[in-house]
Every structure is written in C-alpha cells, then in structure tokens.
Image (tube, rainbow, N blue to C red; front, side, top):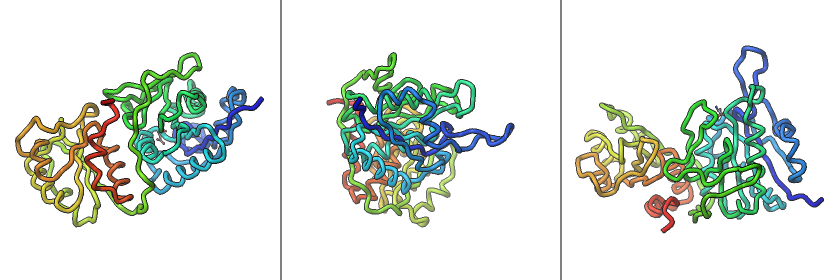
Length: 331
Ligand code: ASP
C-alpha cells in the first residue's frame, strides 16, 4: 500500500518524561522512536520518519533552536512529507506554535502536541495526543491551516491557543475563538474555514532581546526605568484590563517608546486591548498618544514573539498592521 509520508520530531517535555528511579521527579528521557512505538496504529496510516531533535523541558527551548527545528520541518516537506508533527513540553507550546506560525509558509500542516501526564503515569495522554496529532497532520482538510496545536481531542490555531491550566488534562484553550476543530471517532473535523495568516520572512538577525513586564498594583518603576540602559530592543507590557498601566508606568513608557517599540497587551488572559475607550493617564488612549502600540487580541507572550520576529527581519514599520489584523475577525 502506498501510504503517505509523515515526519515526527521529538523535542522533550512531559510527553517524553519519566523518572530514572522511583521517587525521583520525571525528566525528559524518552526519545522519538519510543514515542512512536506507543502508537502502533500509526503504521497503518503513514510511512513515518522520526527524529529526536532534543530532550528539553520546554522552558529551556529558545528561538535559535526553534529556527533549526523549523528548517528540519521544511526539509521534511521538501522530501515529500504531507505533514509534520512535533512533540514538546506544554509549558511553552503556545509560544513555539506562534513562532512557527509566523514562519511556516507551506500548505502542509505543522502540528504540535505534548502531554500533561508523563510517559509512565497511569492514564498517560501522550500516545493519544500523538496519534491525534498525526491524524491531523495527515488529513487533507488540515492543509493551508498553518500551525495547529492538538491536545486532548481538540485542535487549536497557533495564533490563539494558550495553556490555561497548569496541571489539568484539559490544559489548552483558545479564549474568545474556541478550538478550531476536534477529533471525532478518529476523524479530523473543523468547525471553521481556515483563516488568512500573516507570514514573516526568516529573521536575518537573532540577537535582539525583547523584555516583558507585567503591570501589578503599586508596582515600582525600577526595571522599567532601566530597560533602555539594559539594551533591550523592544518591550511588551502585560497591562491591566484593556491595556492599562499606572501613571508612574505611563511616564516611563513614554520615555521608552521614543527609543524602542513598546506593545501593551492585557494580562487578563482573554479578550483584546481597547483602542479608544479610556482617557486617563495610563489608559490605552494615553499610551497610544505616548507612542505605544496596543496588542489587540495577542496575548503578551505572543506579542513578544511577534516583536522579536519583526525586529529580526527588519519589518518594525509593519507592527501595527500585524497587530490590527486579527484572525478572529474574518472581515
Ligand atoms: N509540564 C511541562 C509539559 O507539559 C514540562 C515542559 O513543558 O517541558 O511538558
């Protein structure tokens, strides 16, 4: 039988974790081959190539490594893979998915998955998630949807998905948008048409640094006041509510925004920043006047990825266009 080609890469995370000795904490040790062996059904669906590109807790992944994973994934597609699956830790999955989504210029799906329960734990979800991710990567209706995250039977779009629970099996959600699809009795079903994505070229520069700070009640301005001196190339603030900061922070933002790009997102976890509702000092209208850009629906972490990429490919002049064009709205 002429089965389609599928490429899988393992990067580590809980899906690859087990304890070396009883009573010790789990660490990433399970390689791609062993993960593949946990889903024997896959043999009937595809000719699979699997590689272990790393065994990291996902907190220790970095942009440079992601760029090399991306070039591996592109190569797999050029070699005939009709889809690519990457397994990794769930802690930073929403960020890696966003990173890849801005850069993935193939019609073939790039699907990320992981697990909330480690490999040897009772009821481990890794094998089911991996099998689901492979089904999504192989499905014809997944084409031209960019990067997808498959967890717990749901399919999420990279641009909106977030880890919203620290330990629960149902750890991922897409606030406001909802999942874009699901797996039903082994079939891949989408709830919406694929939406248009805004791609970026590969960054020519990778040394840029983007700071991220969260606004909090009665916060001092020490770190803010040192952002420029520390040499950051951009700043993202997880602001209060609809994208607000205190008066003291607003003053600091004004000075910083004269030198480097500043994006104000919301720390709430759901919903967009405002544009034209509030006028007090530190409000969105005030911060826009002071030179900051509002993140819209992009959460602080995704806004930071966008800013890092825009600086890296020298497209900062398009920042507001990228922030305002949100996939949640089709027109
Ligand atoms: N708890 C994490 C996970 O789900 C650990 C990590 O992100 O590597 O994989």
